[in-house]
Image (cartoon, rainbow, N blue to C red; front, side, top):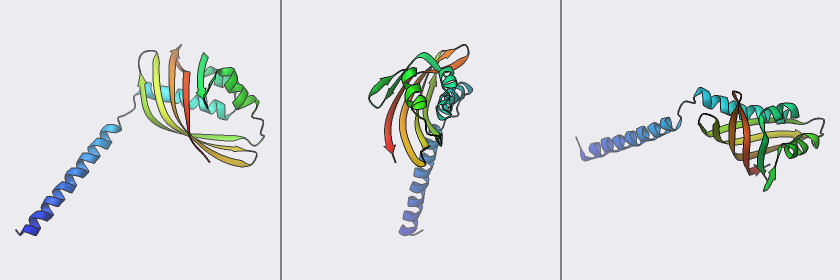
Length: 159
């Protein structure tokens, strides 16, 4: 075999090694989600569905009574959230759809920690706005149901 043939084989081996290493790293990062983690993630999704439907009764059902929300540099409680997201939101054509990209979901017996990227498309007064956040939520388990106890939100982008 010639020197150029050896270099080609070596280069191919290096490319295959890099590809295999990259794929194994990606596969390790995508661990299967457990049933408990799915329940926790679903609790977060349901809370946002209640917001999207402007349903304060359902929203309260998915949150602890003492929920704290850290939004836009302010500390909110459930009444603040209902006032800002439901009561003051009177647009007849309001629609909101949410897409979640879960980053991490950790659970123990009665507490869970979730971080995710949230993208919401909001239509209000015939205007569409896309908002992206990075959020962390702490949930607690009450009567076999996960409820949001703390939510910290960082605005990433608004268009």
